[in-house]
Amino acid sequence: METLFDLRGKTAIVTGGSRGIGLMAARGLLRAGATTYIASRDAEACDRAARELSAYGSVVPLVADLSSPEGCRDFADEVISRVSAVDILVNNAGAAWGAPVESYPVSGWDKVMNLNLRAPFLLVQALLPLLESTGTPGDPARVINVGSIDGLRVPLMPTYAYSASKAGLHHLTRSLAITLGPSGITVNAIAPGPFESKMMAATLKEERANLERVAPLQRIGAADDIAGAVVYLASRASSYVTGVVLPVDGGISLVGAG
Image (cartoon, rainbow, N blue to C red; front, side, top):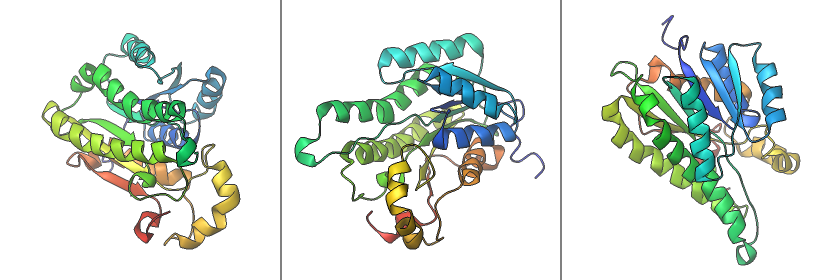
């Protein structure tokens, strides 16, 4: 039990790691001992997050724009230039867009789909040799995709591309789990409910009391809830777990549509 959740000696990558759920995940990985690279489009925000996270362990900020195939490739090349193996890849970077169905813009649809669904696939593809080099049957390399409970149920908000992209990411997780298992790589996802984040700020301002009321556990998520789920999926404790979509939502996804 002393080593079951120990990530010392591991190298982790967290996209979108400068804020919100990505920051929570990175903090958990660092506290468990992993050297952690965080990526963000915003260099200043990434550096600021790295300074905060450095209290918990070895963290390296990297600037990355994953909205295009070229940006994904450039980021992967930067990682490859710095490390010879990747033990944990957390695909967290994402975007949302809300608009009525009759006026939902193609630009918004493409932005969300490209970042939420295409980028995780391209990063797995580009970093596959580094993941394969470290995974063993007893301690596989890990891909952890950050989905959403909106990919498990139909939300009431008009975020068509977001919910579709997260449902797609959940299914991509299952498909990659089958493909990459023989290479010593597990692929799992978490499906967070409401947490304090920039993406959720407006919703929480208006609906926090209602969300807490309908949640079976009567609260929104806390940072340690994400940290615990991610460290579990990154550690030896989950070595025999792959293709799973784990709701981290206080039971909200059990009570029906948004």
